[in-house]
Length: 493
Image (tube, rainbow, N blue to C red):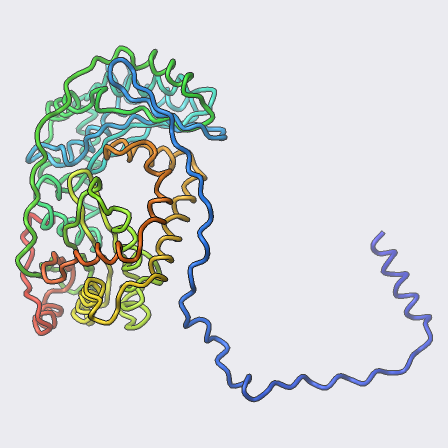
């Protein structure tokens, strides 16, 4: 039909009487002032933050079983449901000399129970079209699974078996330990990761600064008895939450949870006080992890901040975002855009149940390690002291706020992200409404409040770790006024 229409059009054109020829249009002229204008000038202007969109973040419903297990349910229109059992104990609860025990315990829960072997347990998860998951952090341990909405009860039964009846089979532990140690060794070949491992140890001491996955010597020594003891002490219903996100109801999940977890016997919660963290250094020192011949240096720069439950958390998040959380942030603009020292630099205001820290990380060419560190420290000083000519502005805060709220909204697209948020709030001892209230809390933070948190920066007492070629980097660092020493071997284990 289209070809016929085209043919008719051509035929009509051919038969039409020829009309007067139209003279060609003269070429458009461009004023000299426009021709010489910088057509890419807009690229040099930092875009202004747009109006923040309204965000409605759901609040999970909550109930508690008779044995103390908390049930948190968030109803979402999804074909799959995320099921996870979260325990309020992770790496920070590890006994001295047993770093990695929390993470390895969580892993071993998925490697067989007293009624099913490792392969049988995997087959049971596969029959639900899924796989068992495990994870651990500073403040939590968890096991989880995703199922179709129709299979939620079967998924809960499998999680209950995993949590209550772990086998901790010696043969399986040796197999898993071998894989685990290979992962630890590979992890320590990455300069950025190695700088963070050493830096957190210096900043926080043991057990808070120990790697979540454990040090190589500690993991080699862990036994079935160690894992069993950690599980018996910390995996108890009163310290745990069952988090379910999907097309489910609280009443349905509660009834299924009662059948699956109702027989889980309550036990007293651990009562030991958290270990203290060391005082900040009396002055900034640079600790180098020597990588002879390295052409780049990985930098980790940190200082203590308040823990998550302390007032001012949202202001600290905004401060960190405008410092190094955005592409347009101060540190990234300085080190990347102004000086071309790096492809990117980032800051994070880390906040756990027991401690907090401001952490800045980047990677630079070896030859510019000293000036890059000097500029980084200078940006921290300028954020702290408005008299240095760069007071925190309303626009910076608005841009950081818009980014943080938009990032929260992006988490609504997946049930597992929502479940992670719910589980994190529980592990940190925060109310279930925490994520829902975050946009309002961020909006309520004034520029003065953010500046007050920035005033807590102490650029003269930083923990700095650099992984790089010590022979080529150290002289320039010392010439720039930094005291440099080589890292002890145990910082990199």
